[in-house]
Image 1 (cartoon, helix red, strand yellow):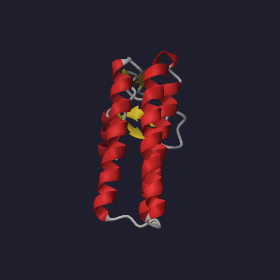
Image 2 (image 1 turned 120 degrees about the vertical axis):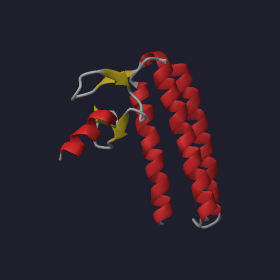
Image 3 (image 1 turned 90 degrees about the horizontal axis):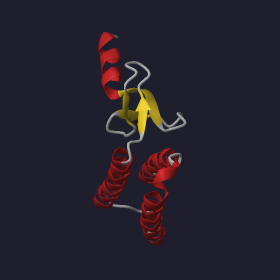
Image 4 (image 1 turned 135 degrees about the vertical axis):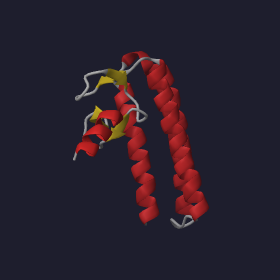
Amino acid sequence: MIILIKIIDGCIDILSTIRRIAQQKKLKDELFSVIDMLIADINKTWNRFKKEKFFISEEDKRKFQWFLQDYQNILNELLEKNGVVKVCSKCHQAISSTTHYFYRDRSAKDGLRPECKQCHQISKRKQ
């Protein structure tokens, strides 16, 4: 059951990234093709889990995590390619709005922390 929860968490992270991208109207066509691929792959995997009565091996778990990471990378590339930026709340620089530069935060509207990773690291060292 814990594995299933981790898988669902991974899907939620990707969907929050998709929501962030959807706010940028110029990305619609590319975004919908990524969404279609993601939905097809999630459906395929979900049906397999149901068929196997929700048992998943460690190898399958790793494969699914890689699969989710691949989608996150595709979405990050889409954001960077189209110049979608976010302003860091600490250094006030406009930085590409990806998980490469910002940590995730599910409670945030855009799914990312307000400060960039670099500023977050600096503030952690000061504590």
